[in-house]
Structures are given as structure tokens and as C-alpha cells.
Length: 157
Image 1 (tube, helix red, strand yellow):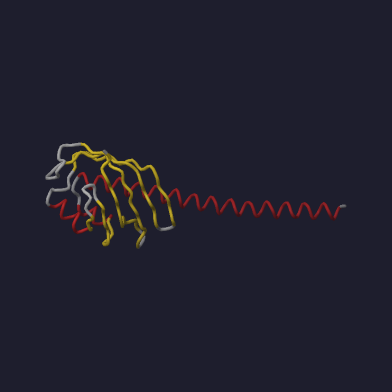
Image 2 (cartoon, rainbow, N blue to C red):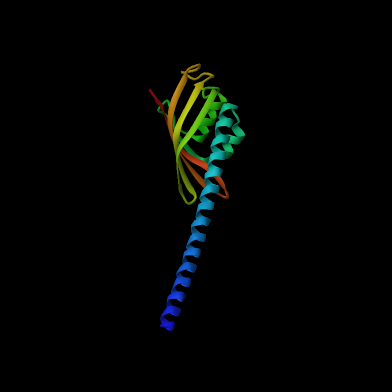
């Protein structure tokens, strides 16, 4: 009887120790996920601020060299093309609000989706008008920093 009790206690301790290790692993994963979410939220805020202020230095830093966009005008454009649109004042905003509704983390890749409300400016065909957009973007951690590699945005009627 004592031997059976000792075996049960040993098994209970081993099970609890295994659960503790498992809980630590889950907590560590949750901590990494929370850090990634914070970092992605931060780069999204930086991107919006940079777009509002035509800050090409920040945008160039946030966008990967291969960055591509299907923009609200239904044009598929590359990073140099988007920068040229900003430089020529075709792509400009007087107001830009982004609401992230979805974020899915796949290691060093994050998918973000949500809605945006913008007021167009500059030489944009919709200058002075407010548009509501749906967007999806893909961020990739490259050389220790997050860069946007792809984006799709469309105007919601």
C-alpha cells in the first residue's frame, strides 16, 4: 500500500512538473506574441503618421524593397511608384485613421486587416473627399525589423 501511494505521489509530482514546464512555454509564447503585436501596432502608427506628413524617409524604412500595393484606385504599384506618387503630391492626405481589426502572427510574418477613413488631398482625383477603405497588409521581420511587403486597399462604397 505504501509503495502504491509513493508511486501515485511520484506520478502526481511528475505530472505537475510537466504542466509547469508547459505553462512556462505557453507564457513565453504569449509574451513573444504580445511583443510582436505591440511592434506591429507601432509600425502601423508610424506608417499612418508618415503618410500624413509625406515622410518618405520613414516610409522607405518601413516598406521593403519589394513592397507592392493594390491601391484604392485599383492600380498595382511598386515601392518606387508609390514614392513617386507621394513626391508628386498625387498621393496625399489631410486626415488618415486606421483601425486594425485582425492580426495573425505566423512567426516572422504578420497579416493585418482592418478599416481606414481618409480625407484625400493634393492632386488626388478624390481630393477633399472622405473615403472609407478596407485594407490588408503583410509585414515581415527582416534583419531584426518589421517591414511591410504587400498591401491591398479598396474603397468601400
